[in-house]
Amino acid sequence: MSGPLVLSIESSCDETGIALVEGGRRIHANVVASQAALHAATGGIVPEVAARAHLRWIVPVLDAAWADAGVAWRDVDAIAVTHGPGLAGSLLVGINFAKALAHVHGRPLVGVNHLEGHVYAGWLLDPGEADRPAPEFPLVALVVSGGHTFLVEMRDELTYRLLGQTVDDAAGEAFDKVGRLLGLGYPGGPAIQRAAEGATRRHVVFPRAWLGDSYDFSFSGLKTAARRIVAAARADEGLPIADPDARLSAATTAELAHGFQEAVVDVLATKTLRAARAVGARTIVVGGGVAANRALRARIEGEAEAARIPVVVPRPGLCTDNGAMIGAAGARRFEAGERAGLDLDARPSLPLAAR
Ligand code: KG4
Ligand code: ZN
Image (cartoon, rainbow, N blue to C red; front, side):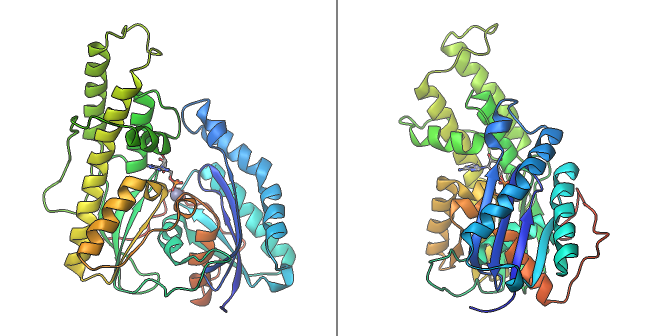
């Protein structure tokens, strides 16, 4: 493998990630400090707490990345950093750190869109992993995270045409909210997956919002339905309304988690496959934290195999936020000649693509 060696930094939400990636594909180091345990106490992210945790961990994460990588500063060609979208205070920590490193070490700085990072995670190769061909264009990419849910068409590197997006909540947000309703804690996604896998009866059906033929998504109705279904189940089990801490039985919790997960997976997989067929995609790429979900992965892989379209879904640790994905996208922006000035600012609402 060849190509530029990029030191990449991700701090847009609640993971502090720093990686060293060669040629936009080969990971030399990829260290992530997760704040999940910190935010579990409040049942969600408190932005100022997240920003301060990045400030606390960013130097140790860099030190750990250097300790893992068999490379040194002299090998680094560029520094890539997430400049949006995300929480302003969290973004500023990574951006300012990247600027200081670029300035002190005299290296070019490249700004990367976090969402583009989730797409390009599909190009990454782990340190010992055998080489494999890069995803082929044209492709359709589904990004499903805590803050975003959308489908884009890519006919070439770094070019995105928006096919559809959520009109209300992101898929991950729905997982997190329903996880809280079921008393499963934060983050809800992995907890719902675990609970759903223990379901024995599978007869509760949650509603799907198809939104006609569009590639848009809606999950707010599902959340409202979940509230109603959970309330009915609690009444059935005779749980006192005055005691919200009283938990549903494990069997009921599992069944509701399963019904909810099926509804989300059904819509995501169906629209992704329909989009892939419509644009003649040669690859389907899936990324973002919710792409770590085993039911979603299995469903998309099964349907794509039947349609003979290759699927790339990174291993779960590369689906959730990490620095390597920023290095994968950053290398391509660097090679395309893009440079950020030392006046690079955070863009909390940075879009990826327009329709
Ligand atoms: O991409 P990500 O790490 O951060 C954002 O950019 O938002 O995604 C986090 C989201 C959370 O909502 C979390 O509940 C969800 O991804 N998630 C999952 C799973 N693992 C993480 N959702 C469903 N199943 C999972 N296994
Ligand atoms: Zn993300």
